[in-house]
Image 1: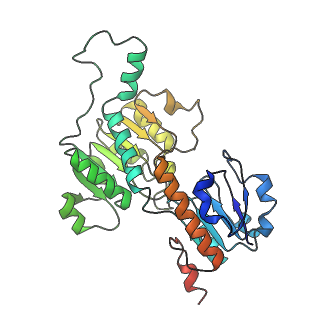
Image 2: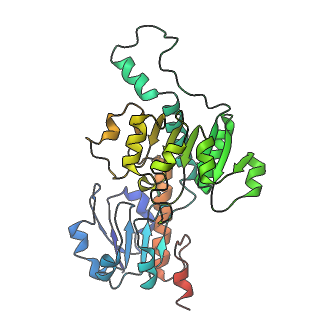
Image 3: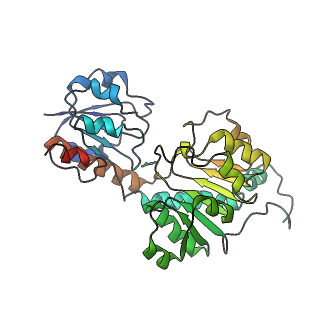
Length: 326
Ligand code: GLV
């Protein structure tokens, strides 16, 4: 039976589809790198089941000559050197679709939390600073009538736009591909990035992390935003230049940020972002619902099994790997 390395311990029922199809070596639940006990078996591994925190690079591939499939339990694949996998003829799978709604929900949740200053309000209530109903206390921003700028109008961007429409927001978006049918459906306006930043009351990031989106939001972009604007990031941390964001929040270039992803990740406990009352940070939980995570694992199992059988992965991010084998 083929050998599969599973980088992290996951609930057994999430991996039930693999039973009887492969031998599994499983890493610890909290692994921050490929565990040494798995590394030692790279030479014999036929498949690799990874999470987004594990880099899959040329060095790893060189140590895994038998590898026939990499299955990432995530939609983002920025932890994987796709070109290196393709060169080696290794298909890479991801888990699109099943985490769209959950991630959009979380985006809306942290947008609302920042807009209505829930962190500060909750801290003040617990600390006894809730003296009376305060007409000027904890004033936040309205969603109704506000402009939401969505950067990256893929599946999650669209799901976010749907939610925002229900809250009465106007949708602006920036994406390499304008989508006229969407513009009609959501009354969304396609804009160049600079214009979107200038006009938006909220900016929400939904791009994959690539060489083109790395530090897409840096000092010039933050200075372009309204001083009342709120930045929301549930995509990938390095899409935002962290030091520039700290400055923007300290100096009032923007009003607040709500982050599900950071750079670095995890953010160390003494990081300046944690000391800012106008910055909400949650630990990369966009897809963290019971049903979503189980569905992601099931999709990752499907990809893995297909790869082990030499079949085309149902969700393959480097399909060119098949063209080159013909
Ligand atoms: C989560 O961030 C994912 O890419 O699935």
